[in-house]
View 1 (tube, rainbow, N blue to C red):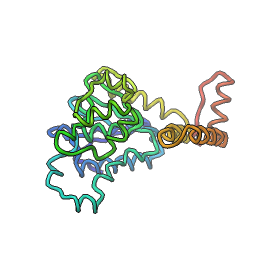
View 2: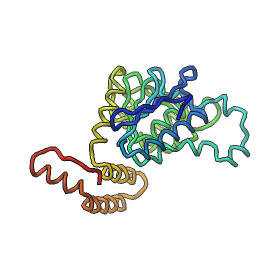
View 3: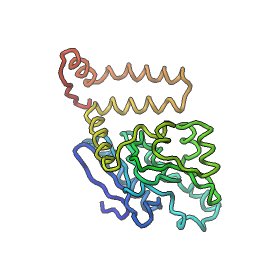
View 4: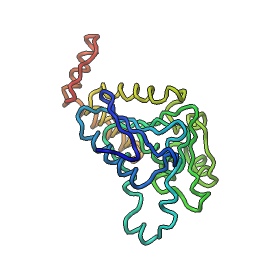
Length: 257
């Protein structure tokens, strides 16, 4: 399909989505998020795609939500339609999604990046939840995901003051997995995505599900869930191939089944 606010392409087994509202620094609007959900649906349904990369521009991953679009909205309407609920599509993807962040990732942009499975940050990246400065609070997981990723004290400071953190602080705090030079950001994200896509697809889904369970359960329940998934991997041909390849000292040839 044709898109107005995103650019979509396929690189081998990778689905690449680029937010593309340059005049608005990629501010998240309803149309953009509907297009993003459609692109994600398409890649999720494509058996050729093993991983996705979500990125923006050099200046901004996304500088926030589109304030002009929501400034005059009223509570009854927002509540009735459960406004922003559809913005969570990234968080429900079964296939891995990597955020490649350069420039500003603020407000909704920071929240969108945190919905992804991990964040690669350019050395120019800046993260923040500045909603408090315009009289509101984060609405798509900022107070929840940020707290889980960086801890209460830093999340509280950022949400109450609107302070931004740069890439180095974000890496120290555990918000991003690593920092790369801005000029190499997308290439590094594609490289990581390609490594994932070469693994057994069903086993990747199980590994992602197991890691995500750590944020939702007790340690005992999480370990039990992990063990059951580990047991389940032995039902796949790829487990037999992977272990046989290790014993034979060769590269595995996964069939994704």
